[in-house]
Image 1 (cartoon, one colour):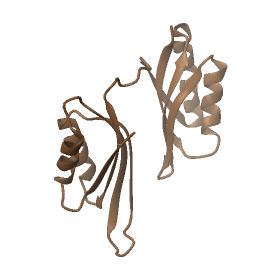
Image 2 (cartoon, helix red, strand yellow):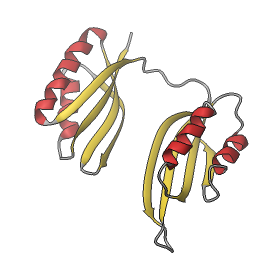
Image 3 (cartoon, rainbow, N blue to C red):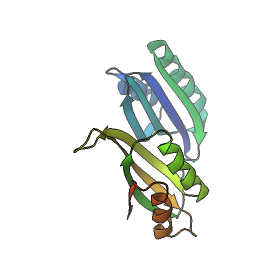
Image 4 (cartoon, rainbow, N blue to C red):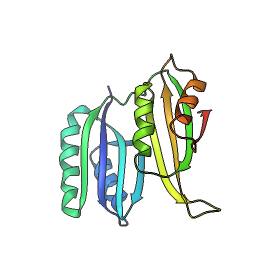
Length: 170
C-alpha cells in the first residue's frame, strides 16, 4: 500500500533548493509525485506530494528537517494522496480593479457555495490604458453537485461591478 507525505518548503530564494530537497527524498526512497513551487518577494515557497513506504516516513521527515541548517524549512504531514472525487472541475478566471479584501471576498463566496478551491494563482499589474492596478486570479475549482455554473458566475460577478469572470471546463 502506498503512503504519502504532503510537504511544504520555505526558504530565502537561491539556486539549489529543489536539488537539496529532491536529493534527500530520493536518497530515502521517496518518489516526488506532484508539486507547485513559486518565488515571492525573495522567498521560495512550495508544496509537494511524496510517495514513500510507511516504515520510511519518519526517517524521511527527520532527514528533511535537517535541511533547516541550510535555511530550508520543510514541514510534512501524512496524506491520503487521493484526488478530490468526481465533482465537476472548472477553470476560473477573474479580473478586476485591485482593492484590499478582494481575495477574501472571492474565497468567502466560494466557501459559502461549497466550491472547493484546488489551485489559486493571483497577481496585480498595471492596466494597459491607465495607472490603475488590476487584480487577476486564476483557479482550478470543484463544484458541488447542486451548483450550476451560471449560478456561480452570477454570484461572483455580483461581488463587484468591475469583475470580469470566466468559467471553462478543465
